[in-house]
Length: 193
Image (cartoon, rainbow, N blue to C red; front, side, top):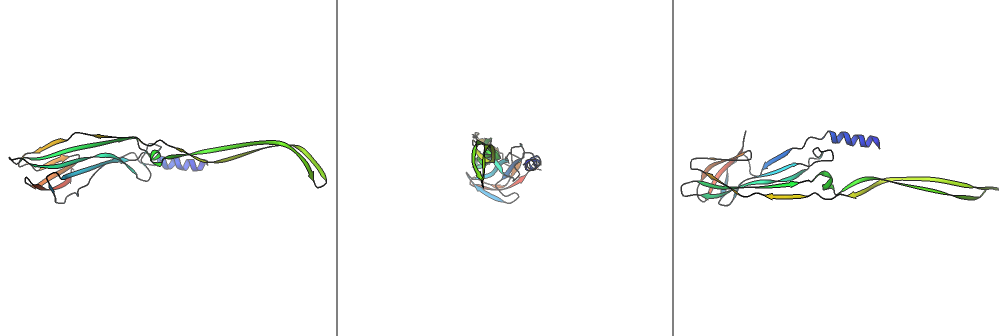
């Protein structure tokens, strides 16, 4: 039992620190097109699921932290391109334990018994008192309260790109405008260096 617990502690201690991730849904470096109201860039945010030692989940599981979305709204008469940015943050205390739904707990049961014995073994009469103890061990499962999650939608932020400008910077990415008019645009998404 002690060797097993030690092995678990070594594995947990070896887990990495919690990392946060931002992953764009659109292909990087490819020419894309969007019409009015279309999503130009969506960045999904996540973080490593926390284990009981406060480190990253050994299996690489993640939990959702929200997203950032940029939509094309069209062009004004002077050629200014209009976009909107909307961020949704998700605050959660989800961990490997709350996702599991239960926690294994060692259980112990001890039974004491005593009595008087009378009888015979062969032709020899036997009589006496006896006492005995029996211990049973096992594993029980205790339900864990689920994680609480709060979704925090933020208001939309207008982004206006003056004629002649070609870049929109959002959360470590750049939307490079290749061609645009009132009906739509062609663009590429690139990562900031």
